[in-house]
Length: 306
Image 1 (cartoon, rainbow, N blue to C red):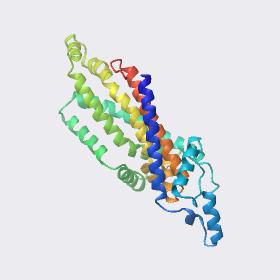
Image 2: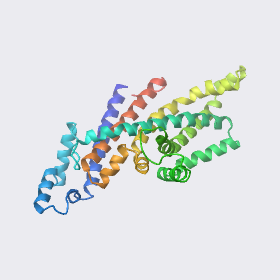
Image 3: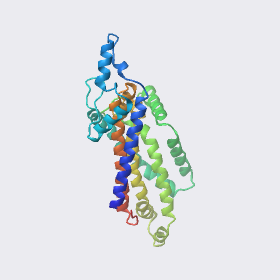
Image 4: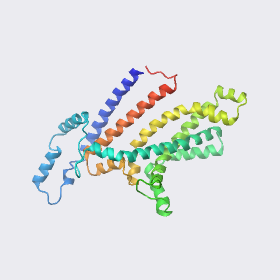
């Protein structure tokens, strides 16, 4: 187990290095942001001074070395806009909104998706099974931004039932969570259904039925309990993916999270903030995946990592 954890940590460090390098290179390809910060009254001296102040007078390799060395010390730089606040501080201020959205999405998807998966497994081949599978397929096929725009148009613009933007009130969570949760809910449905079908066809379930146990106990106690392991481990993975994938939803609904911060940073060419968002999200995603794998090993004693 220790060797496995050590190996995964090394892999995570390598992945972070690759991600940071790619993001750094892509952000520099968009051009020099100094022109966006100057006003019509700025002089050539102002341009030179600002370029030197932000470090863009140096070559790309020199900029990367400075960025990497600072990142290793925990310094992710400062925003080039406004009061030039530390990039980590800006991400930390926006992160709770994204975390709330991601956690609520996963919880809602789990609580609805797992029972639907059980029902479709029990009623395999029925009309209910077919309809739920079509719903799940649609959820995993439709783009999140399209779901968000349609939901906003129908429920907010036309019916005026829900606010189209904002953060803090319970009703303001509904549209963003709905837009994100359709995909994750569909994934839970399909995974639970597949796992439950295998469990229901196993010998120990047949034995439980022979013993005369009620179908409710057989399905919801014995079969479901043995089918939840892959579902629970997937919950951690989907949480990491949801946090990493909130950019589109936060942009559509003006949600004040790290996704919208990344979008604003791209438009403003705020390289330090964009790099900070990507590095922090990538780190969280890798750590969540590592924790899920370790949890899987402890839950299922049949699994051994060498």
